[in-house]
Image 1 (cartoon, helix red, strand yellow):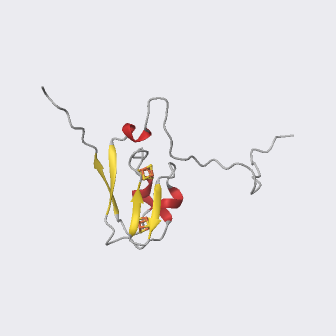
Image 2: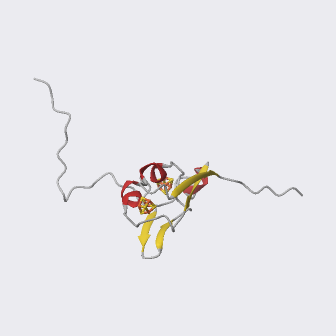
Image 3: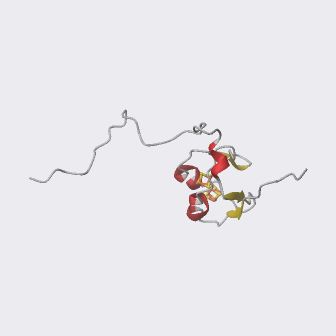
Length: 99
Ligand code: SF4
Ligand code: SF4
């Protein structure tokens, strides 16, 4: 008999949700190649981006959404799911100081 691959998760079991925290090399936002930029004038505070963000770094507030960039990895899922196209992913820039 084939073994079922469906796992029933009880509400009090641990869910696969991560929390913003340092990795072995420090803040995980340093991996980011693209940065999410939010247009809070377009945002309707529907909560979808916060729901789908795998890094759990989005907070929906009365005045719009806030992204904790120290831990945002730039995956772009928030921009994909936003029905208002209120999030744009732009290339990350790194400041290099030349002595
Ligand atoms: S790009 Fe968006 S979905 Fe991805 S980690 Fe950053 S805020 Fe979350
Ligand atoms: S998915 Fe888009 S419209 Fe909805 S809260 Fe996020 S930025 Fe705002």
